Image 1 (cartoon, rainbow, N blue to C red):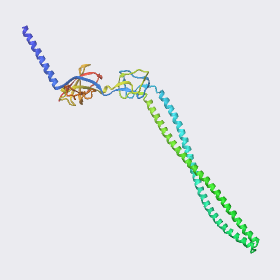
Image 2 (image 1 turned 60 degrees about the vertical axis):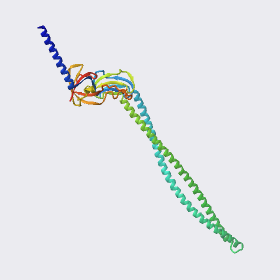
Image 3 (image 1 turned 180 degrees about the horizontal axis):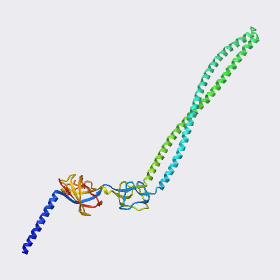
Image 4 (image 1 turned 135 degrees about the horizontal axis):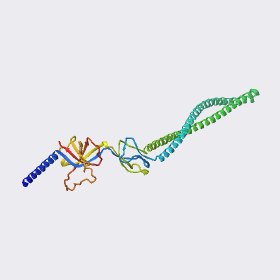
Length: 371
């Protein structure tokens, strides 16, 4: 009797084992199963300051929730504000210098325009007077030469007693008057030439003034460029002052706090790690031997070690086009002809319907339904 019961028990156990084995292999044939799965996040950011300095305040603790735009930490901006103040003072001084240079150029230009105009018109007027006077001198000299001949002729006639002494004196007086007239016109001509030379010197000085104006114009351009660079430097410092305040880029939870205040840090040093819990997904490293029938859109069942009784529904979102080893730092060298076939793994991204209580880095078990 006991032997019969023992036989029945053994048969039942064998049946259970066979049924379980059948279910196991049937499940594995219909689903791609992997234990190499982990919970990850699209939005896990290491927050840093864009400037270096003394971190004076750290407002958040690890595991604390934050809102987008919330202030997380600050750097002492005193040194940057002092630099900005000095630059603003320099800009004001340069602006005053620029205004003075522009005013000086304007006055020189007005003065030059007036002097050049006057000098030009005066030179033209003197040139006309000189030309007219030259004609008069030439005409008077011609008369004088004719009168010299008449004086010589009258003198001969007077010596012969053909004319009276008074007639001879009259012709001599006319010659003296004409000679004085020529000398007077020549003196006036020389005076006009001297005036013309003075006006030409003034005109040449105006050319020098033009050079000064051009130099002032170059100085104005240089000062404007310098002013522009200083203003850009002020904007840069204002940006850097803004960078002394670290804000949350999105809603999330402080995953890690790297430093404690006060602490001097360099630009780019990590301050916080911020995680967005709503952006979790499951990443699977699936063997190429299990890839058949796995396509985007396939249903997935995800279980995590932290809650094995909980089954999370998911979908295959994407499949990596290359194996995980493709971008390894030390790629396989098969140039020698020696080759050992290795099982390659491909990253598969799985979106999940429920990410409550899941944590980045958790291990997971996935069953991907094959098509």
